[in-house]
Structure formats: structure tokens, C-alpha cells
Length: 187
Image (cartoon, rainbow, N blue to C red; front, side, top):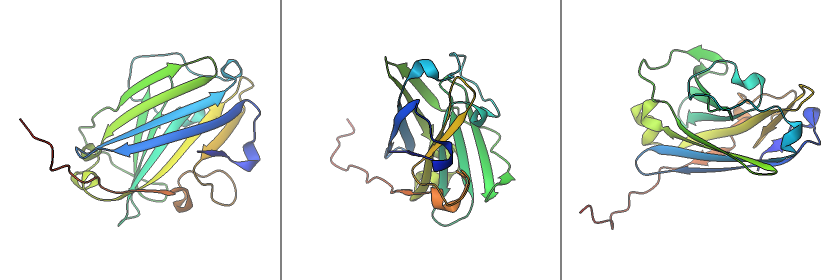
């Protein structure tokens, strides 16, 4: 469950839940479920899935992925429009180059009367070969924009002070490598 940063409280959102799993084939799957008065939120209209900069300025969901052994990390942004972004960092907010060939995440968005659900799947080996085979530290977060343009910031854990999803304290979830099931018959 994500919590709202105390400086950005809103009565439009009732809660945000997230579910994360990691498959033996190296895919990270995340589902965000936003429980809110959707009529009072600004959510972008569906568009063709493509990479877009600046999604964090409006309603979007975010996953930060770090290896246990390094200060480097990646940031994925997923918008309800189907647009996405990826950033690489050498350390805290220090931008790093991305691989030339980046595999786009798979995304699916569903709207119900009072809920918006966004599923995303990311091939971890598209970040690096080691991402698929080592424990990861994750930070899960969301930026929610209401009809007035006000933003609320949601995360698994907020560090002291202003909202900062990049802060080391925000990486509150450890995801182990799943065991390979040797009982599955490959035929």
C-alpha cells in the first residue's frame, strides 16, 4: 500500500495499492490500483504506447529499480495514457546513459467506476544481464493530479522532508530472484 506524503494530502484519492512479482524468466510485473473519485482526477487519454519525457508532471505510476550492490538505479514511469519513460542514474539523481536498444514495457490500463488499474511488465535483462539474476531493491510511487492541477505524491516509504522518490530510504522493497521450478516437464 502506498501512502500519501503528508505535505500533499488530498481527499480525491482513497488509496493506492501495488503488487509486484518477478518471474524466473526475468520479467518484473507490477500492478497499481488507484481507488479514487476518478471524475475529480486529471488522467491523460489513451494514446499509442511510446516513450515520453516528463510524465511525472501529471498522473503516473513509477518503479525505481536498484541492485543491492551499487548506488546505480533505473526509473520507469507509466502513464494511464499508455505512455512510458525510462531513466538511468549512476547514483542519486546523477543521470547515466541508457542502452541503445531498450525494450518497451508491456502495459494494460483498466478503468472501473471508482478504480483505475495499471499493469506493466518489464524485461529486467533489457536493463542489464545482472538485473535478471540478482536481488533488487525497489521503490514504488505515484504522482496523482486532480482537476485543479494539484499533485499528490504517494510511495511505499517517504524520506523526511519534501517528496523525493529518488532518496535511498524510498527503496523499501527487496525482491529476491525466484527459484526455477525444476518439476516442470519442458515437453
